[in-house]
Image: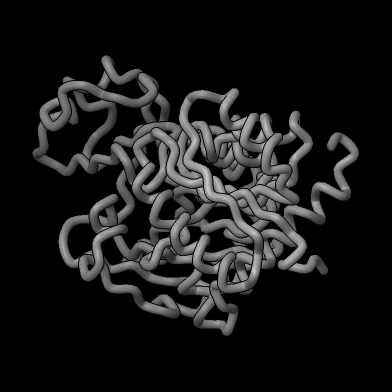
Length: 314
């Protein structure tokens, strides 16, 4: 085991994408934990100036980087690849697992090939769907590579095509269109390749979108999730299998919809860098089972150091 007082951590937080504010919130919670545990810590909010990031790493010479960033560029393998080249240990998943996990269509292909149930859907071009229905409603339109429910739209029966709600699509021009699955929203935390538990999310209005996720009081958290024992067991198994099929490390969160009437589970996505805000799901699930926030942070650092010491390419 590493000694926190002799382990210099470079905490990356913020960034410049749509999830910047979430990352800053996660970063603050992580920073407080690191200081509480005695880690010498340097905080850095990166910009597109990659030379500046490399300079910070060269100057600080951290023992490990805690990746508190979210979303495109930081969660999709690009940052991880850079850190691999620089030979710096980091938390969470590898470049490959991060790239697969962030790209929703690829994740769906991997999971469906191994009989993990995912919603029926297809990849379309934005220009093809903005003014016409790509499938019979209800369906969901989402970016292929964003997190935190950024850019997600639910099109119900009787609704106009998604172009009536958003004129300019600011994300990848390829979009994922999926059949809408009614029922309960549940999330499974996986740590050290083992499923920990399941939390149910009940938004007080609408669906579990960005606002519902990060605004206190807008969503009820039910722990453990109020679903049948057989469905609970299946969701745990599917989340654990998804984590391992994608080759993930650290902690992940798998999001599901449970169709109550049909007793069917569908895995929506795997989050390779789940949030660490005050309202985040993974810390809440872990706390229910006696794993503190500090313990998660310390374990992630230990896991990152261990992986680096066993990676012949670093």
